[in-house]
Image 1 (cartoon, helix red, strand yellow):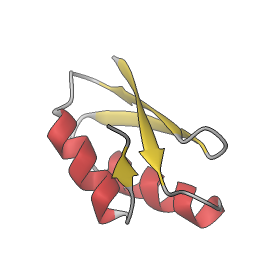
Image 2 (spheres, helix red, strand yellow):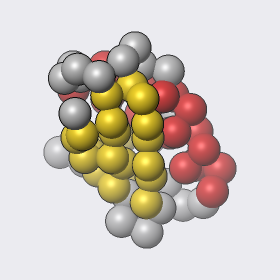
Image 3 (cartoon, one colour):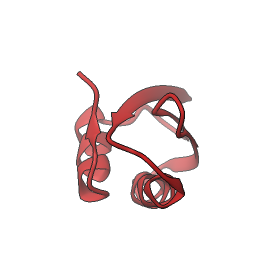
Image 4 (cartoon, helix red, strand yellow):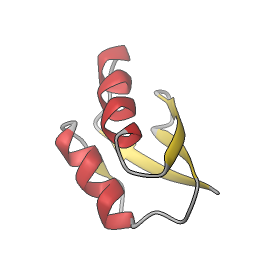
Length: 67
């Protein structure tokens, strides 16, 4: 299953790495692709993810999901 989220506040490669690391740690996530230019984060998972869990992971990395 693939879901795309938009993350705000990312400005560099370190931002991308932080978001990738935190979102990848969610149970069931198999791949995370981050596009720095657009803020798009495409998450591939075995099952549907709880959007709250994704938001919390992004916040743990220091960023926010766009509304």
